[in-house]
Amino acid sequence: MSTNSDTIKSTLDIVSVFAAIGSFLEMFTPIFGLIGAIWTLMRIAEMIAGKPFSEIIRRKKDAE
Image (cartoon, rainbow, N blue to C red):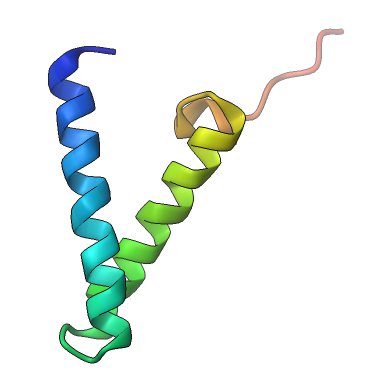
């Protein structure tokens, strides 16, 4: 993963946290809060698994 991609992910992480908190404080619409919460949960899953989210949700075909 490139440095540019890491910078974008970090920026979106910060924005999503503020969107989620702002939604709970009724500063933003609930839609933005939902988007922020989903993004934050995706990033937490990436940190726990140590893999990109696309690899976590991708189904593997059984070897026959």
